Structure formats: structure tokens, C-alpha cells
Amino acid sequence: MLADPTSPTSIVPPSGMALYIHVPFCKTKCPYCDFNTYQGIERMMDPYMGAVTQEITQWGRVLEGAAVNSVFFGGGTPSYLNEGSIDRILESARSSFQLKDGAEITIEANPGDLDLPACQRLISAGVNRLSIGVQSLDNELLSLLGRRHDADQAMAALATARSGGFSNINLDFMYGLPHQTMLQWQDTMQRMVSQHPDHISLYCLTLEEGTPLHRWVETGKLPQADQDLAADMYHYAADLMEQEGYQHYEISNWCLPGFECRHNLCYWLNQPYLGVGPGAHSSLGSYRFWDISSPGTYIASVNDWATKNPQPAIGLTEEVLNSVLPVDDQEHIDEDTFLAETMFLGLRLLEGMDLAEVSSRIGIDLGERYRSEIQDLTELGLLEQEGPLLRLTKPAHLIANQVFTRFVG
Ligand code: SF4
Image (tube, rainbow, N blue to C red; front, side, top):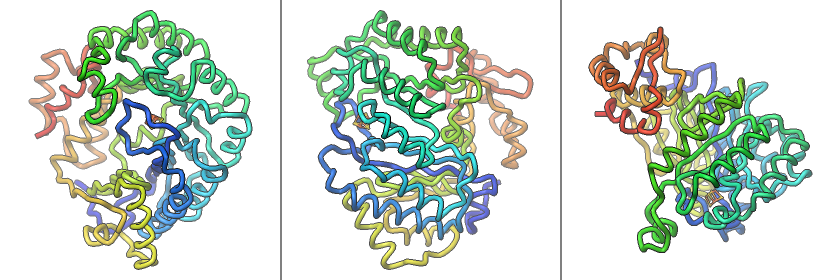
């Protein structure tokens, strides 16, 4: 059954939670991006630092210094923050929570921000995983994407990160781009695997409404990407990485053995996480809630919260959440939603879900609950059972979201 969200111990188990820190600054805004991130608001960096560290301190009180297994600095461009910022945020996390020994601490970085001293500073702050937004090794595509680095800078950043001491590095790439050819993609993928990054994430471009790229495609300035070609690119990359010894452990993620992203595993296993910073989402107990998106309003609200309520109540109830001023809105999810989330997040992991193990952990027999959905999807060749594991079949990887709708509603 769902934990009763009234005390910190029922919200965050002794095994701990993940901590996400949203950084809303980018030096330049890429035309395809609809993340909650802004260019030209650097004047807010100092007030943001005060607010985000204050928010961490306040939450540390509410959750009584719960255990934290992983910290992820995402954005935005965390590597664009002023020198010393990451140290300061981590210090506040360490003094407010029980940051476990060996916790995975990831920072997303732009290749242009990674010189040797920057890498060494991050390592000495305790960051032990780097996620570099490379996106492509083709300069024309990088320029179309509005990225502020070129292919040489991306390759140099990887080499610098290695020599600076990082031994756990992810590279992000994008496919399904307007004008992108299979030859360009093959060249990018081959050069990428020759560098043996520890982890690789591939994202198919989605045209988000309201972005310049969406407008350019709508108005015919750019062609729509060919979706069949995008699927071929995904399969080409998957085959290449398999040959090179990478494990395809999640629909969009590959790693060398032992380099799964522990922070993201927490999301896929539907385990608790706290998000701080503008627009950051949290999942604690049966509550889903998110902070105010506007950086200015977020900063003012955290300051208000800390001033009006410097000793916030311990434990999480609707009433407590209503008093957390930077929280924009919340949902108290019911059992059906929790079970559906558990299914579709768990099935993103390609080794499969151990239904018996998960059922015993949450106290509900998922095999029984979803008997007819599992049977139908298996007959359609989209799910398969091997021993205790239920998983997506290969043909289902690219239509996983359609498969998951069977568990909702
Ligand atoms: S660097 Fe990343 S977060 Fe920033 S605008 Fe570009 S895609 Fe968005």
C-alpha cells in the first residue's frame, strides 16, 4: 500500500532519496529548447544561489535530514554558474541532509565551459559524474541547433574532463533533426564510440510548441524530419553500441557495465526524489509537487518562506505543502495512478520488471492487477516475459509511450 505521508520516515525510506537541483541559466537559449531556462538573467545568479541553498536548508528540516543517494544538477546549464557555486550548493546539501558516502553527484555541462581548472574545481567540490550536452559532431547541425560549441570543442571537452579526473562521463546526442542524414549520424556515432564514454543518452528531437524551431518547421523555413529515418538512426546506434560492449539499459540510455545513472534509476524505479530550484518537480510519498517556474518569483517565495517560517513543521502533509511558499502546485496521487506510474516507469528499464519483487515491495499484486493488459500486450508482441521479468520487446522500444497508455486510466 502507499505510504501514509505524515512523517519523514514514511516519505523517505532509510534507503534514501534523490536530490535534483534545477539551474535556470543558459548563456544562450537554443531554438528547440522548452526547458525552464533563460538567457540574459545572469543578474539573478547571486539571489538564486541564496534562494536555492535556503530551500535546501528548509527542506532538510521538513524531512529531518533524510538520506540522499544522488544529487543531479540539471538545467539549464549548471556549468555556467559562477565559480564556487556548485561547492556552495553541495555544502548546503551536506549540512541539511545525510549525503551518503559514494553518492552519485552529476552535473550537466556545456562543452564550452569545460577547461581543466573548471573540471578540477568540480571534482574537488565532490562532483563525480559529468553529463556533457554534445548533441552532434556535425558543425552544420550544431549551428542549426543554436549550440554555442562546435565538434572540436566537444571532443576537446571530453578529453579535458578525462584528464581533469572524471571517470564517469555521459554524452547526450540528438537525432531526428531537420536536414540530418544517415551519413552524418553514422559519422557522429562512430566518432563518439571511439572515445569510449561511460554512458550515452540519445534523444529524438521533439518540436515543442512555442519554440523557434517549431515555428521554422511550421512556416516551411525548415523541413520536417523524416520519422522513418529517425527510427533507422536509433536502430543503427543501438546496434553499434551493442557491438562496442554498451548495455542498452533504458529506452534512451546506454552504458558500459556498472555505469548506469543511479539518479535516473531512482525516477524509473518510482522512488522518492526532491527537486529544488525554479520549476523543479518532486515526488515524495503520495505527493507530486513542483516549484514556481519564474526565477524571480521563485527567489522571492523562498525568501518569504524562510523569513515567515524559519522552523518549518516536520513531515509532509497537504497542510505543510501549502505552507511551502516556493511550491507552485501539488497533486496527491491515488493508488491507481501510483500503480500505473510504477508499471510504465519500470518498463522503461529494458532488462524488465520483476513483477513479484515489485509487488511484494508495494504490497499489491501487479500481475493480478494488470492481468488483461499484460496478456493483450504480450499477444501483440509488445511485451515478453522471461522468468520473473516482464519487459518491452525490441519492436516496442520506439513506441513505448503508446504501450504505456494501456496502464493508464
Ligand atoms: S543549453 Fe540545454 S537547457 Fe540551455 S537552452 Fe540549450 S538545450 Fe536548453
